[in-house]
Length: 259
Image 1 (cartoon, rainbow, N blue to C red):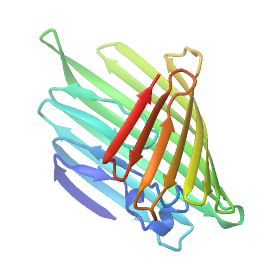
Image 2 (image 1 turned 90 degrees about the horizontal axis):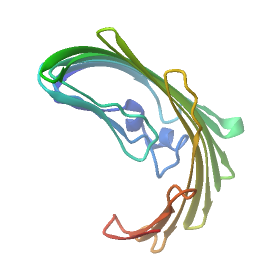
Image 3 (image 1 turned 30 degrees about the vertical axis):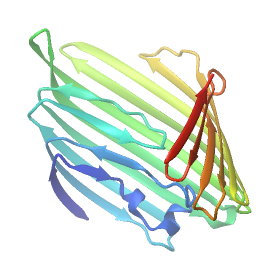
């Protein structure tokens, strides 16, 4: 059990800091858990994490309290990972966040299961036309992802997530629901990696159920000179618009086309 305090501090999830032997059981050696949170003002974090290089189970429980009396922006900074982010701007704000996540590796199936749950309750003052409006917010998030590796050449991931944001302000209430499901496959053949993913995203306000949005992404990555030179081509949202990019090295040279 560890308790820390910080001012204008940034935190990384503990699962993102576990040994690579644990990370490779979930996302592969090329991708871990690149999720970072930036908090402004005073924050206290208490967390407990469990994970060993030879362990089949890794887990993390974190409780965070943040208070800022000054105008600020509170956000989640996410890179290379699916997530929903909400931004609150106000004169002051305080927030209590509880998150639980864990990985379970099943050797007989070569499958890793990741479960994540998060609940957040916050309060802040928003200025509208010179008047101070007290707002209370509640956010809930849950996700389940499974990853199966077939003969070290094919990775198949299935996942689903749900989130809810509720805002209460002087008798007015706003509720926002998000649901998403995805399937992602990655094929490793020699120095090449080919990936295809399909996402289904459904965004709803109150109890409405709009049509879902489908996203199709594809990418090809090839190591040319013993992992020192890599060519990368990707297509994002191929069902509607197409975007291709080519990179070499560490983003030293970039060429992109869109049509």
